Amino acid sequence: MAVKPLERKLHKLNEQVIKHDGVVELNSDLFDEFLAKPRNYSFVVLLTALDSSINCQPCREFDPEFRLVARSWQTTKLPSRLYFGILDFKNGREIFTKLKQTTAPSCWYYPATDGSFAKDVSEPDRYDFATKGFGGENFASYLAIQLGTSVPVKRPPNYSLMMLISFFLIGALAVFKLIFPTIQKAFQNKNTWAALSLVIILMMISGHMWNHIRTPPYITSTGGSINYVAAGFQSQYGLESQIVAILCKTDSYKFSIFKLHEMVSIQTPFIFGNTDGFCAFSVVSLIVSVPKFENKTKQRFGVYLWMGILIVMFSFLFALFRIKYPGYPFRLFI
Image (tube, rainbow, N blue to C red):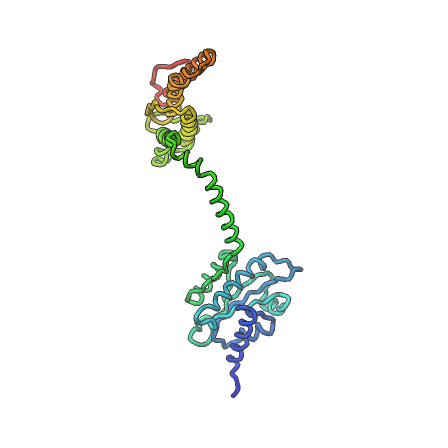
């Protein structure tokens, strides 16, 4: 009994698929034979140029992704519905010329012209690399739209990456075991939590949450000059709050170094939180730290130093208050 031409083509296609791991390696003659009408299968063809003399980097990039989708398709229930073919330029110059292809890679989807999967439109559709990219997942999504069914992408496990991650994970666990006693002491130390609480409290006082709610401008410019501090109690700038937050973190770090157990907290709006931190630190240092110096010269120097910082910071506080409220009549040095 004579074998029908369509059955003969399917037999040759299946042999090629088995031989080349899901892909049909084409030349000019096979291209014309397998794409000749009628065909009860769809065919997607990759026109590429993998020869080293051509040096087509996009071709090398897409080739493994195309083969990955082809292998994954073989795991579906009806693999004979779609075939994947690759035609290299060195094996099909005539086809490139006939299709007027001057660039590579180029990928074409030829729908079935006969059978239950045939479409009214039998003209090929070109895969757009510019918009869809070279990834296998994007290519599979494109084919799924053309076929009306899902196209899987089953990537093999990356054993090298898994071994690398395991190596670093084991190393991280070993390091953690070594430093765990130190970490445990730090987490159980009340000064650690006091410093963390101070950072959060002073950052909130400086207006960090207000920025998230109101989304103020970062800075403003008036008459060619840049304004870092907003006038009035109902507004502030983004940079203003960031400067305050940095200064407040510095204050809380100093508190933790001296192991202070009390904190003077004056909740003034916006930018005054940092000067209050300096003032509070100066007062507490004069009360707690300076008296501990046994050397009278160092003790006297500490008194002069922290009294000077206290006076300067209060002067700065008054100056900032006049920026926020220009009608404030008092000042100290500044």
